[in-house]
Image 1 (cartoon, helix red, strand yellow):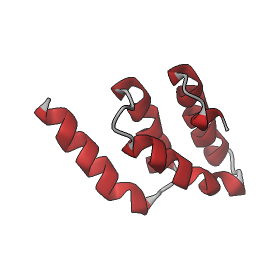
Image 2 (cartoon, rainbow, N blue to C red):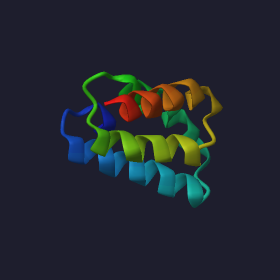
Image 3 (cartoon, one colour):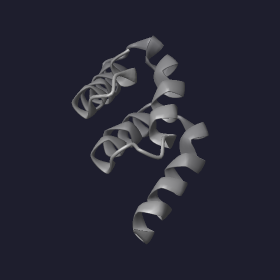
Length: 79
């Protein structure tokens, strides 16, 4: 639910916590992938939030996030 709140700080902390939980063996952490991906894909998501979202998706080995990650990095490079 923290990822769905508007505050950037909450989103950052939630993404970091999900990645940490996964590293520590939490099996259900992959259930967060759709929410992480939805936040990453939002046009108004600041870069400071996108980075921990991307790191969490990579940590979770969320291969379905590859197109979004590529699109985000390409878009950021062009700005």
